[in-house]
Image 1 (cartoon, rainbow, N blue to C red):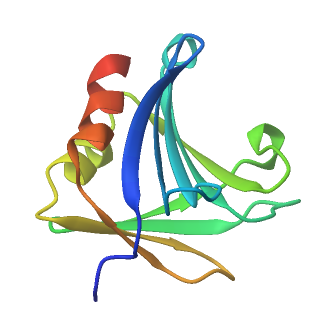
Image 2 (image 1 turned 180 degrees about the vertical axis):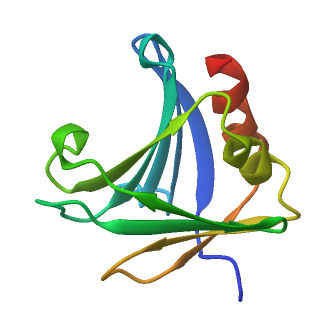
Length: 125
């Protein structure tokens, strides 16, 4: 599948390292945020979730199911927690060219594996 149109950007948001993906000038579709004190990276997709939502990440090395956590999902976002030592983070960072993010009820996104993604993971570790 072709890569979803958009670009990754990286920034510090207070003490958090954040990579955001979207079309310049619009709200991001995806964010990857380092929550160092919690020992996790949060993967967020624009959408709404009042309950747990099935999510999945597919990389060149395989697919992995995730479940959103509504307690930490701000309005307008579906958020999953990934522990810092989870091999999924390395699979995302080293995926050949792209990885897919599938959230139940939303179109699948095919995201480029750019350095901004790796930066957040490494900043968190």
